[in-house]
Length: 140
Image (cartoon, rainbow, N blue to C red; front, side, top):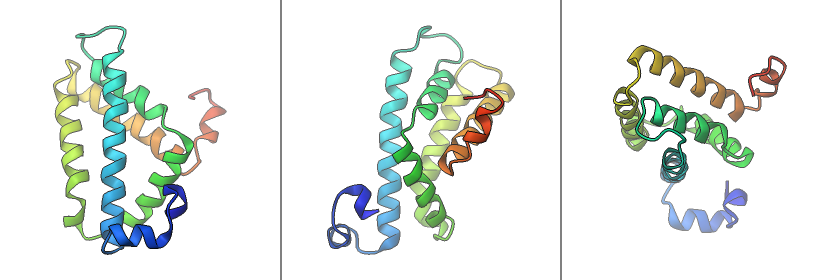
């Protein structure tokens, strides 16, 4: 992770008291970066103010994540599963915000949830470099 952040391991440890704090900090940074990308997609939507605007932005911003970001998310995911739940509060809060946006996007809530789960599944596959299998069926 230090290499991806372009700092020394000592530099990372200077700013974070332990590995859990580092993982939480990186997770929060990724959430902030995704929020910026999501807002940009939302703002440039072709049909502003129509039902599904947020879902469309979510789909586009998710599919446009860089390979480097996806690789970092995959590494963080493997570390997060072993962390105490109380350390994941910012990720949980973000999930709640996404859920509220989804529910208030003007789409049928069941359909919107299915869309979100499908895009999250594609994103997850991409994090672990399994998306190439989707190319064979034309989903990318």
